[in-house]
Image 1 (cartoon, one colour):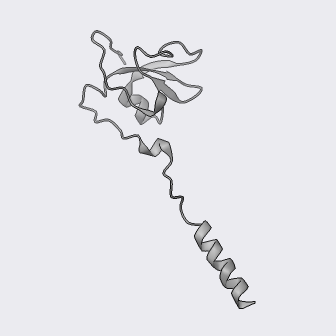
Image 2 (spheres, rainbow, N blue to C red):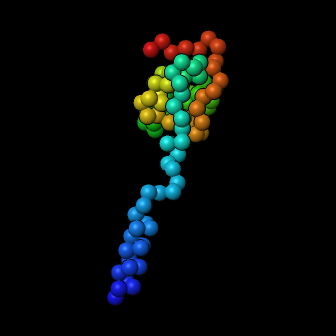
Image 3 (tube, helix red, strand yellow):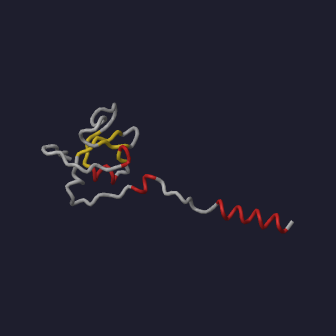
Length: 97
């Protein structure tokens, strides 16, 4: 009986610890607010919580969404499409808010 409870306790300890895999959204580093990359305008799909970079397929084309700066989108908890933040500023493109 002692071995049974020892084994059960060991299983509880092993499987109740924190997961070894970090969730993907925690791997996205916030952008410094003073960089030009932080000011890239993005299209946020407010239904899915994903933002799209300029010159990508869904930029400005989803049914529900709003334009904002990349840093604002990240601060509000939106995730970048395809898992990577926008890195190429587009000349002449700006969000006024």
